[in-house]
Image (cartoon, rainbow, N blue to C red):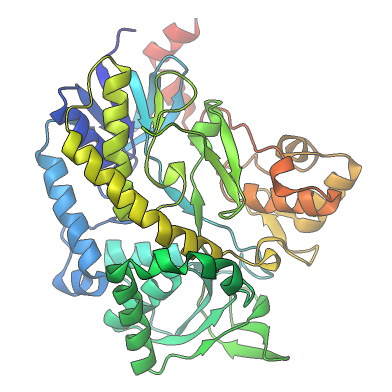
Length: 463
């Protein structure tokens, strides 16, 4: 198959949109495939017609995202929403499913802008109805303006925890409490990076506003929380925890969990791109050059899929990755001013990121379930005890654990369970996290129907 695009971008978040627009300005023929019906990614996920109330609750950053989307829609890009990518080959062939119909396209260069996913929080009861992630709650707010009619309890740590609590307040929801699981010792490892954080005045101002409004609303914040358990008979009814030297319980039908986000490396791992362990963010990320290019020719990664930087930095990374792709295809980096500005902004953001990553580094007890009956793999309902047993039997990595327990063989293909299973194996065998090999996902990356695979184009290819 001859190349139909110079550059294929997968993902329409801030990195993907910026990369596509930049590459188009550089003269490349650009296409973008995205699973969502509208551009914006998770951070700027938006309804077709957002109401003024929802826009006000989501804040000024979301308004910036809407302007970015407007520019993207006006650009000369072959944009294909609702396209679920389920295979990418080493020579740039991309298979996708759109409106139930299988399609295939080839690009000279592929840029992955697949963003981040929330880190799983495998506490007892986390699979009960009424327990969900903070990110999922935010999606419901963004796409449908949904707010709970009962006070929600937010549990965990990280900027998104406080942002969503603040957005809930602005949307008229009640917050039962914020239970902070950040270890007190994190402050000491973060303090050397405080100067970089203090230079980010706008970022600090946002955080102060969130906390000020939460205090004004008399939202309870309980620090030093450990041993979180969600209790209920068939659904969440309460959350219990240890804090201030005693066991406490808060009655609530809605518990929102969050322990930060990690790079979505599913496709980059499947392609066999070189990855390295980030001990601060506690997950794998692709090894890239200064232009976002991977070790395999023809592939780049930008945005949070390359390492957690945040939405604003993702735009700069997307711009640099577009220039890198253009140079890899034989062109030049034409917008020297834009490149210099992007690098300056990223250098400034790196200081704040170093502080945030260390301060909100989740406690190991929040990543590794202590109770053997806690579910580790939701798709296959594999418990922590079963994973530990597999590790004692000899499973050294995620692929071997899959053979013993089926963890990672469900619809999510390990997206949700991999961090938990990896940490359980490391704990059981006395290994460092970096010594437990990651999953090597195989296509199809997402569920695809047999009917789509039986389409004439794919039958001919298989034959």
